[in-house]
Amino acid sequence: MTPDDGCAICGAAVAAGAALPPLAAAVRAFAAERCLDTEALCSGCRCGAVTSPCVSLCTLDDAKERCRGCGRTVAEVAGWSAMTTAERCAVRLRLRPYAR
Image (cartoon, rainbow, N blue to C red; front, side, top):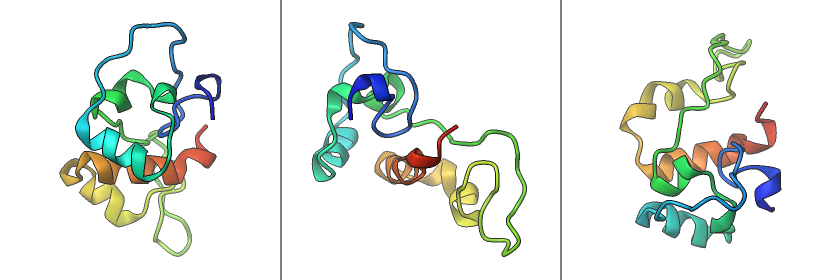
């Protein structure tokens, strides 16, 4: 995956040639465990400020287990604010193939 493909964690645009902010320790560890290219991370993910995948289309699937808008489970939506950086990264990475 390259910066041209978007952030390796969340899919957001990666500013090519821009000065990159320091890599947060939790993100460094997460990226190393999954062999992610840290040069292909957006500024937010690099800093550990992993944004919510919410797209404001909040409805549950028929099984009432996942949000149709962002793909998170009910537990992930409810617990987002209490998640660690690594937990947020894991959710965003899991949802990355489905990012709009």
